[in-house]
Length: 167
Image (cartoon, rainbow, N blue to C red; front, side, top):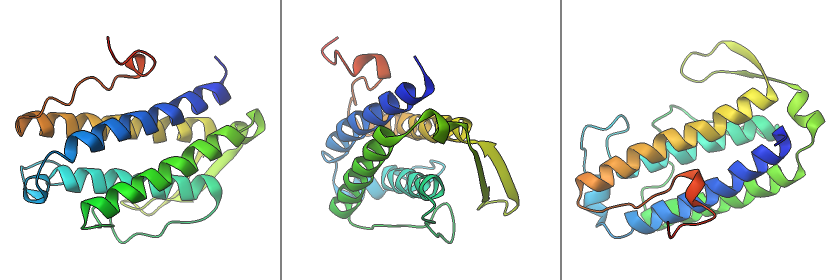
């Protein structure tokens, strides 16, 4: 599989996994989603918010439309419905962007200044895109653990299950 097809597959997976995860999170009360359980971003809501924030920052870098934040824990949406709607909107944009990618796009260099450690950075675009999708998976994994702690079995959201979720 070439890098362009890989990125497109991961964009589709991103949407599928987020839709599934948000449906599971919707079963909880707002208080339960926001309860500080000692997670890196405090709660389920905090983790979902960070994931949207991180994706927005990276997507802004990829599209040369900076998404400015004050911190990696900045709350974008206190309301779960608004957070979910913003997630769905960004997932639409990610899929459309991935559909337009070319080998030349993934071959270029990406330059930006970090947030947590504001120094200039430079990576090949394909490596940054791979990080983008890997970062999503990392934090979705945290949310599945937090859901289990709340008594909700999130089910499987592994990439391999996307085409056959009944397995």
